[in-house]
Length: 150
Image (cartoon, rainbow, N blue to C red; front, side, top):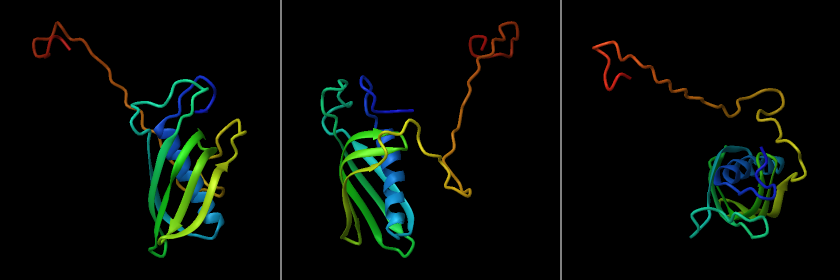
């Protein structure tokens, strides 16, 4: 799934998932053991991101988390581009216990044609997908069947 091709819109789900994944990877690359990190994205006053590829789409990002040794992690900034699981572009600042750990204009590979694997090399838990199927069964000839024969 690619979220930044011309003609498509940038979604908060793509931004939050990708920012969470790539910031965690960057912190761990910098020898910070991340216990957890959770991100949110907001398009501000707009109900939806701009629909045109020629317009700037900017989402405010806010992440909160904690290191394995109990220090607070905060990541704030603006994201202008995200490719699901592969890259984010914009301006992001990560702090640990209030001290800046990094400031970047992008993370990951925006030229990637596919997202990286969900599970880390060597195994480990990754995100899961739940599918709910709803079936309507008609039973009009059964007097016990309610409501309206369904």
